[in-house]
Image 1 (tube, rainbow, N blue to C red):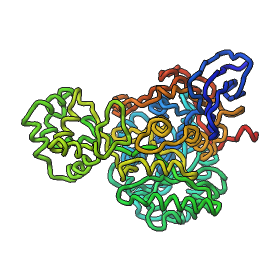
Image 2: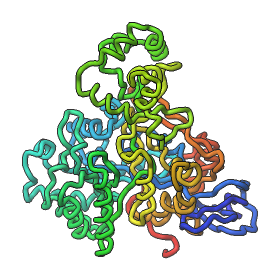
Image 3: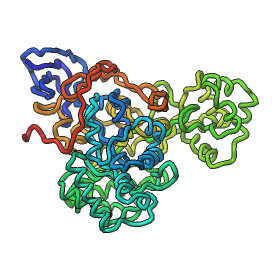
Image 4: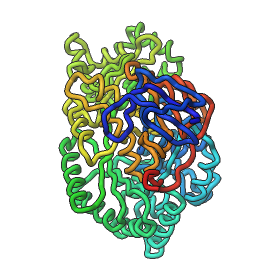
Amino acid sequence: MAEVVIRNGTVVDGSGGPPRTANVAIDGGTIVEVGEVAARGQREIDADGQLVLPGWVDIHTHYDGQATWDPEMTPSSWHGVTTAIFGNCGVGFAPVRPGTEDYLINLMEGVEDIPGTVLADGIDFCWTSYPEYLDALCETPRVMDIGSQLPHGALRFFVMGDRGADHAEVPTADELDRITTLVTEALEAGALGFTTSRTTKHKAADGRLTPSLSAGDPELAAVARAMRHADAGVLQVNSDFGPGEFATLRAAAELSGRPLSVLLLQVDNSPELWRETLADIHAANADGIAANGQVGCRPISVLLGLDVSVNPFGNHPAYREIAHLPTPERAARMRNNEALRRALVSERPVDGFSKWMDYALTRAFELGEVPDYEPDPRASVAARAADLGMSPWELALDLLSDGDGDALLLYPFENYTGGSLEVIREMLADPYTICGIGDAGAHVGTICDASYPTYLLTHWARDRTRGEGLPLEYLVHKQTRVNALAYGLADRGLLVPGCRADLNIVDFDALGLERPQLVYDLPSGGKRLIQRSTGYRHTFVAGTEVSTDGEFTGARPGRLVRGAQADPANS
């Protein structure tokens, strides 16, 4: 008798095959049968009219710190994620020398917008080496599986100290050997990859560029040799992709013999660059070098509001005089005090922030109770204000001060140059892309994209009106089996006998996103944006139900995944 039998559901098994009505039996943490399943289970779940899907595999998160204090791993666990991988973009917290933790906190704060006070209060640095960090992660039961990658920034600072952080010198021969040794050690301990940042967008909170930015060919070769020796891991890269950059990364991947995974997105100042990078990815694969692009499924957007990190009025002296007030009282004054309104709208400070906001309001949109992440450009704050014969600043003031002052504006700054998601559709449809860039756990006061797996289904398989969508079974395949295999996790992402029983039972008609909200539940009372979902009826991790109708059951079967996992079909 199986522990659980799920009956009459519409199974979309992660293989890319069409949906079918079938029963799923779970026992001992694995799928044991998919089909008729004649025998009764110890527990029976009627999933008639609902989707039965593999659990989501999120390969691009930044839970490096949060995973040490939050066993519930929200917001990802509210969106059906059953495996989350962090350590991306070259930032993380191991290895670390005692007494230098502040630098890694400073780096994470600057690159990923996680307040330093939150990290300092929340993380118990009880490790020095990267393997010790993995051991520490093993000590906390949680609602999902996690995997970690070795971050280049932490490694470089550990080996070179301030010389590496300040880009003053290149590593010595001995330091290169040390890098090779430590990367090998990390991969053999269970790191799923090695990650590096090569973008000028990434700076520590004190303004210093990310340490890995100046890593040259010898340093990349030292990393690649370790990956080849260990025969393990993915080389994950966030880059600006200037001239010759992809060739450099391709050479490192070829030397390593391991897959290359790069962030792929559209930027306004070079809107066709992503196509060039994708062409390079195709060429690499044609030459036998495994490479893929990590893509999103909606615009990368900054949320603007009175209490989030970016407040359009936050630099105004008149606003600062009321900034200490409770939000509802502050909003009421902004609505009703005519002198204050005139000052906020007409007496703008002359500075870089105001200039940037002048532009942002031409691209920002009201975010309603049902969030629209593919808004019509004609609905921007500036366009609506022009139709009403008013200043964009006045309309922004009205929108943000409405009610209790918790309203938000959505400013899409990447993946939305043309004012639609057609480029995203093209990215998603490509065979050499994988789903990622949700950045769950990061940008806690500015971006709220951890919910992207839910949006992937609702928008692209059900709701899109401004263009074609994509087949449900394709999207499920992309977010489950494709992501899992990209990181060597062949034991999951597929509902077939022998695979892990990580799965979601979803009411597709009810599946949706609530409006993001600001909460103060981080260590030290730190704030973060969260976004809840509707429609997830049951989420199982390793055969144990961890949430029912959006509420946690209290079960915490999640574990640290160390290294690649074998495909049960081939075991």
